[in-house]
Length: 320
Image (tube, rainbow, N blue to C red; front, side):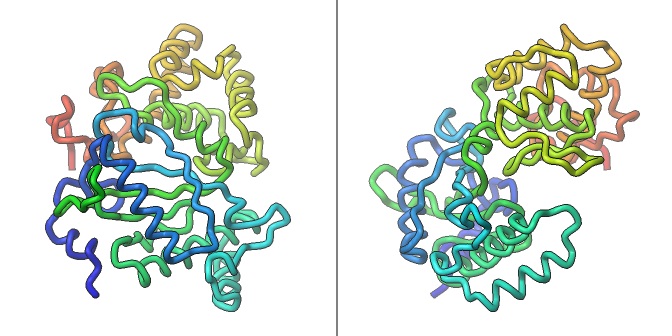
């Protein structure tokens, strides 16, 4: 039987973060679509308890470009590092072969991270084989997430012709996932990712690496310095001499305002430079309050603007 998604891929052109073949989904379609998605997963993996947290802007706006879900890592690996292969119908020999391959090329990943990566890759492959409705992006699977496409359903449980949505299953500590994808303000052209990527830039300037799924690591020592929101907040406050609260950190506009008021121009510009470089490789618009800075520093920073949306004020500045 030919996958419905494979048929949809030939006709959908509205865009998508990974697949390039998905449509935006209306708020009222999210719940019925997720219900069908979970049921499909349960058919393939009856031993798994699919308890998802919706992340980021899911259900907070009239439409969403995709659906980000959080799933606790303990559904995949026990606290002592034992992979739950039986729950996911994963052959042990196949897992060991892939795990050894991943460990052989791993530079800084822990054993647990390598085990999780092997599991997610094999799960994505299995979904691709066994489901007529779920397709996965096999090239991107394993880095803490499984990227899927799935048909959209309306409130009556009926499939919406020619429309699929991207659904990302992000695996990790749920408290951290909720924090890393969170934003309490959506206005102008600012999305949840703008707040998160601003944090990524702030950590980058401090020579720290922010991971959406696991925490914050020191770039030089490779030491994990934060695995929960409180620790992440402490790293930023100490690194910049600030007194940010969790509420400020959760809001792009409040966070940006605090940085502008309390940091030197040199330090602020370091963050903005890093931030705009990150956004330049992200399929999103530049926040309105930074578009003048983007124009004035485009050449110096080598900003291409290739991924800007067609309705952006900055499209005329795109370069090849």
